[in-house]
Amino acid sequence: MSLEREASGAGRRAAGAARPKGTTDFLPRSMAPDPGLFDSEQKSSVERLFRELARRYGFQEVITPTFEHAELFTRSAGASSDIVTKEMYSFTDRGGRTLVLRPEGTPGVIRAVLGAGVRLPVRLFYTGSFFRYSRPQKGRFREFHQLGVEALGEASPLADAEVIRLGQEFYSALGISDCTTAVNSIGCRICRPSFRDKLVGFLRQKQEELCDDCRRRIELNPLRVYDCKLETCQTALDKAPRPADHLCPECNAHFAAVLADLQRTSTAITVNKRLVRGLDYYSRTTFEYISGALGAQDSLGGGGRYDYLIEELGGPSEPAVGFALGLERTLYAASATRQVSAGRLPLVFVVWFSEDELTVARKLAEQLRQAQVAARVDYEAASPAVGNKMKQQMKTADAAAARLVVIVGPEEISRGVYSLKDLTTGEQTEVPAGESVVRIKQLLGTLQP
Ligand code: AMP
Image (cartoon, rainbow, N blue to C red; front, side, top):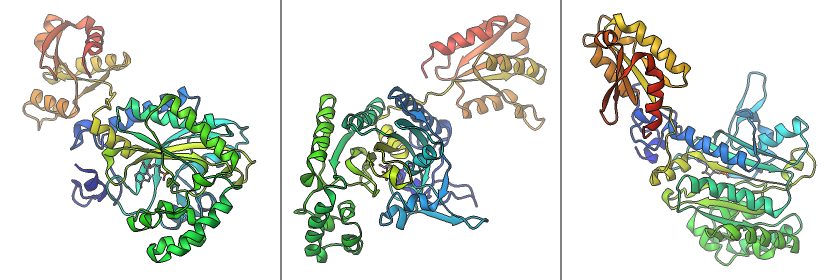
C-alpha cells in the first residue's frame, strides 16, 4: 500500500469503520498489507534503536502530555508560523480551557523542565505522536510520530555538531545511505534585525512575484518566505540576501565551528543558505536530514539551535539545541532500503491433538513464557463447531506469524516426546518432553529471525 493511499485514508477499511483522514494504523508485520511500511514491529524496532543511540549520547527519556495549553505553542512556534495559524488541533474542554493536541515536542519538554525546577544543562529525548491539521499527502499526516532530542543549557557549537551527528548515526544504522544533512545559520538577536531590514527591502520590490501568504509574511515574518514551497516564490528569492551571508562575528565563528566539527566525521554535509525551517524560534544553526527516497516531502527530520525559547517560555536565559525526526518518513526511507529488522520475539505455538492434551499444552506454554519465550495456545479450536482442530490451530499459528510449532499429541505423550516444526523451513524434529523448554530455547537461538 502506498503512503499516498494511507495518508488519504483510502486504504482497506472495515465497513463503517474508516480511519480518520490523515491517520495511519501500524499493524503487526504478518497482518500488514505491504510489509515494511506501516508495521508495528518496525516502528518499535526503530524507536528502540533511537532510544539506545540517544542514551549513548547522554540523553535521558522525558514523557510529556499529548495535549497542552494553546498558549504554550502560540508563544513558542510563533504566531505567524503555519503550525500555529493553520494547523493546530485546538479545542475547549468542559472547564473552558483552550487546549491543543501538541503539534511538536520542544515547548512541552521545556515546560516540564521549568515546572520541575530542573537545573540546566540537561539532555532529554522523547518519542510520541504529534498532530497537525494539514492536507494529507505522501509523507504528511495529521497524526504522525516524532523522535526528538533536546540539549537544554548547551551553548557550544560542538553540541550542535554532536546533536546533528546523533541523527546521522541513526539514519546510517537504519541503512538509509542516501541521507544527507543540510545545514545553515540564521543568525541571532544581534545580526538578524539588520538582515531583516535588507530582506524586507528586497521582498517589497518583489511583491508582485510572491504568493498571498508570502506577501503577508513580508512585514510579519520575512524569513518565513524562504520556507515557501511554491516554485514562483523560490525563484523570486534567487537574488535575495541570505541570512548566512550577514552574520555577526560571533554567529560566523559559531557556524564555522559547527561545520568544521561536522566535516571531521561526515562528508554528507551541504550548506543550504535557504534553510530556515518551519518554526519561528530557531537562532543560529538550522539543519535538516534529507532523503531522495521520499519525493516531495524529502525532509526526514530537522532541528536547530533555539537560544531564546527557554527565556520566552518564562525560564532563565539559557541556550539549547535539538531535533525532531519524523518516524513515518524514516520508516518509509528505511523500507526502501529494507534495513529495519523487526526485532520481534519469535512465537512458539503449542498445538494439541484433542482436548485430552489441552492441559499439557497449556502447561508447556506457561513454562515457555516463564523461560522468556513467547508462547500461545489456540483455545478457540476447542469449540465443538471446529471440525478439523489441528488444521484450525495451524491456520491460527500461521496468522500469528509463529516461528515454531510444538505438537502435543497422544502418541507423542506416550513416547515422552514432543514434535517441533519450524514454520519457515518446514523442518521437523522431536525433543524429549522433559527437556523441551531448554531445547526449544536453544533452537530459537540458532534460527534466523
Ligand atoms: P518539524 O517538527 O516541523 O521540524 O518536523 C520534523 C520532522 O517531522 C519532519 O522532517 C518530518 O519528518 C516530520 N513531520 C512533520 N510534520 C509531519 C506531518 N504532518 N506528517 C508526517 N511527518 C511530519
